[in-house]
Image 1 (tube, rainbow over the protein chains, first blue to last red):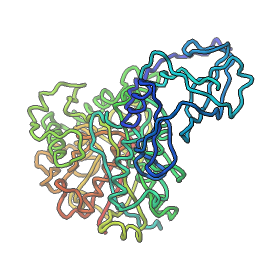
Image 2 (image 1 turned 180 degrees about the vertical axis):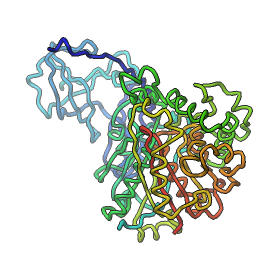
Image 3 (image 1 turned 90 degrees about the horizontal axis):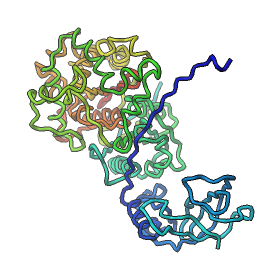
Image 4 (image 1 turned 90 degrees about the vertical axis):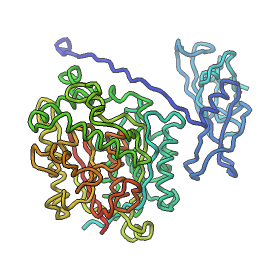
Length: 147
Length: 385
């Protein structure tokens, strides 16, 4: 019966222009320059990455900046059993991870490079790897290698 | 019986075509911070947040998600509204319901839109019926022009009448530091010389596309009296819906059934029999000059076919008997998710006596409306008592 059902196909393209604002602009410029920045409220220990210009918890400006060393801890991950043309990979699988960066209280989502994803554990220590050619975006980072 | 509810504070951004200096979250924070400062409150004093936005005009879904730190929603009861042009009034009315019912004492209502990041007309294209109307009359302008031509032919309003509305709006906007289109020297001739977007609507007959946010604090009677020397008391609210194909209602502008229903309901609740005499000021949601003229009739400001005469006589100008849109209205600023809330906030400023250069002296009773979605109307009456 399915051949008797008509399907009308349409396509809608939605353009999008992102405005980073002052805090994320500094973060993007840092990525371009090979530096990783976090921000927080002065006098408070909490730091977020990517940085916020304003903390919604204490309702204060988040203008206390810190440069992070690029090491961190794997908090969560997913192993995709095939490659994707858009993403660089080592081995046959792609691993996405949430990495809690040393010096920050939030996680950054990125690729985890390993040839043995079966051995990954929550708590694995990792280090950020920059791309040789960087544009001001998240792809300036190649991903994280296991320490 | 609902508890008495007062608007005690408002905050707006400087509305403009493109706010490229800050992101969406920061835009919202700007308006929210101004409203909190206006009330002398901290975010911790707010019991719940009502949020209004018309996605995906920003180009993506659920903008409230990653902007949550900017509107104070962390850990608080919050609801989001998405009802088209009425979204700002729907959000304000929801905030009113929560305080009037006794559920919360102090509520923050926020409306926002950063249209420069997405493509509003693409999003509006998806509103029409996908098979029968999307290809023929997609987007706001053509859709509106079709409605307007019926009204023009039935009511006898002229292009000059419409141009006078355009001039009134952009000149009033010069007294409003938050307004987007401020054109102190705009003339009727210039409006008539602007090109047609779609007959009968010219470029200067239509609203702009703005980035902006608006926030208000609503509180119970006892709290409102402590927070503001003169709260803007919400006397009545009404929502009237309508849903149809374009083809079902060619007279949608000439006979705005939802606008008649909602306004008559709030007038009756407040004992208003002659709105031009009984109201002191109106902030109405007019997306185009012809909409404002049609709304004069549908809101009962004049008899059918008399709206042109109303603007000719200056009844709705700042010095007239019932100033309409001292802020410049939607014709001067349209940041969609915030726009209808701006009508309420501006009406509240008038009642609180805080409207600055656009103040209508001694404003005692004000009407605010929202219009849109699929020809829906929200209406609120605010007063000093």
